[in-house]
Image (tube, rainbow over all chains, first blue to last red; front, top):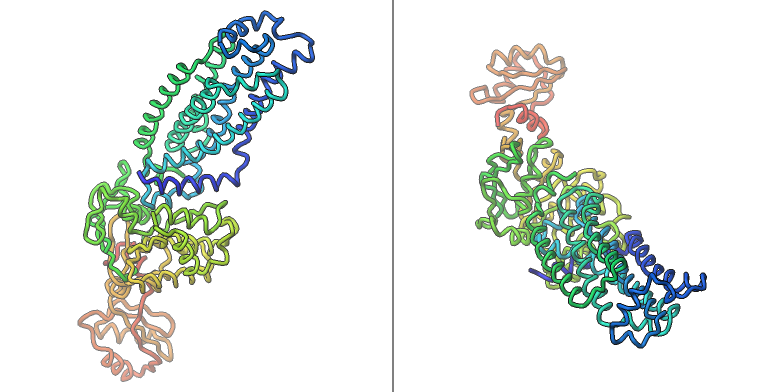
Length: 269
Length: 303
């Protein structure tokens, strides 16, 4: 593998994205929703209704779960519930880079083919593996940058609007692992799938529709957390990440074997 | 330098290229002509290491390239049918990405040289989307030669260009010959072939003919004479037929005839015609255009 060639194509991908800010709108939208949801539920609704979260039986399970954690015992019950909500919605924040990477990755190979720029790339010594890695990184890097920026806003919103100590709980190892380990790995899985699909189908919509399936397990995780009071612990995060890493390795290998230069060059119009 | 050895390519049941063999030498411009769907682009793609032949082989400098396509692509410059430039990137950025993809040790220097060589330094900072078609083709050619390839494959390099841009491209191609590169050019433009090519291969899935343009003319039409008279030529046609000439075409004051082996020499023809009272204004060897040669070959005329 030649990293210089990967870096060359990655540089091109990033330069090309400068002119397509529209690709980031889905990510910005989901990031905004993920940021506003806990603010709305944990801060604005109680403020406007005059009811405390800790008075509601709906959040009893959250109080109990959260106060099992030694670091959380210093929080009062209202702050504990707010912290729980902010941590739960962090998984939603993970979806924002997935949304961003999806449209970029789905466009990757098909876009080159449609712009008739793929053949000159294939005429260089670049290998299929290097091409796919560059395409995947070209979608991952901006998506993660966006995700981390959203996280900074998220923590800032918690610090400004929630009770004292809530923002601090977002900087503990578990939420950080969700954002910096599980999130990127989920993004990677999503866009590896999108790039693989992008090299097999001949329109971006198909690629995007198929690759969006990866969002489903993460959404399921969010629902499980909210409904069953299920806490994603660090071992669970590491397990999910490991599974995704294994899936990614398999997907890239599959992508290389499925990437058929001949079909792409001769059959796609 | 670059050899096709019995190259065959099939796509399912369809044979795109059938047992095609030729070689392109250093310092030679070799033209590949043929109708749409004749297999020209497929041949170029096989030679460039983009797709694998179903059978047969590509050799570069005598070495088979099967299994070493990546190395082959380092040694060959391939100008694709479409310029294939990234519109949002500047001219310099486009070239720089390709210089780095080719692993050039000093990509910026290579890009600067290419910009100078192709006279596009003053447009280097502009996005390629704003360039004219001719300039885009110029950038694409610069990209093709960035890594100093020994062999250059050009797929329809002047297609869709205005006459001035096409002339510029032809000059650049001629320069490649002087630089001792092997140049293979696929084109529909027979006038271009006439001006540029040292040898021509006529392709229609399989090889129809391969030779220099001059030899192809002779092989397709044989030697011909054109005689222009002061008056109507019809009256002189019978004399020529009696002298053993066949394949006569009379048009106004002119007769065109096949001067095959065994027919009288030109001085004898002139003497006989003058003796018969004909006034000859001119007599010259008739040279059919390459287009006529091509059309005859495509209709199954003698190769």
